[in-house]
Amino acid sequence: MIEVMRDRTIALIDDFRRTILTSTWDYKLYNQPLWKHIYHALYWFDYWYCTPENFIEADFHAENLHSLDIDSDVQISKEEMISYLDKVKNKTIVYLDNFDETMFEEICDGCEDKTRFACMLGQFPHVAFHLGNVNSITIKETGKWVYIPCRERDTDNGLFDE
Image 1 (cartoon, rainbow, N blue to C red):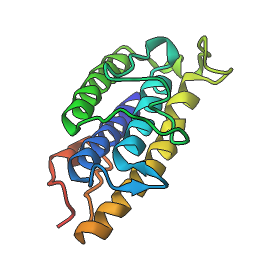
Image 2 (tube, helix red, strand yellow; image 1 turned 60 degrees about the vertical axis):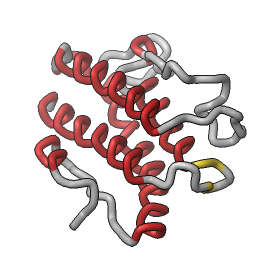
Image 3 (cartoon, rainbow, N blue to C red; image 1 turned 90 degrees about the horizontal axis):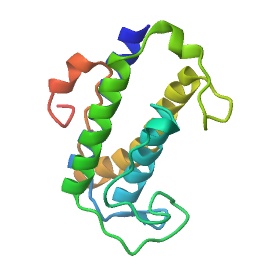
């Protein structure tokens, strides 16, 4: 099961990268720029996937920057977001490399009585929802579909579904 989880997680992280690289960064969706939707999803992925005890937070984070309900004066570049994504990816790979089957059912401090598996699995629909919204704007703006890999081996494909 760990191999499947790692495979799908690497693909999910690559979805972030593709969405960052292809999105119209400042386009407003529900009164927030697309970058903030991406950051919201990445922030909570960082927080929950490896459990709150391993949360690293972005160097550029400011109060409420992760909230889609609160406007921010901060502007983040694609390069800053990719840098944060790389840190989260590296942390996540280390976490998974040190994971064993017995850990799936552990309940960790700060996890609201959720198992590690529930924390991990819960991020897939959350991330898919937010990145799907952003990617729908990319489709609308460019007429191109962002390629969404489902497995790690698919992450070598181009940015768009050709």
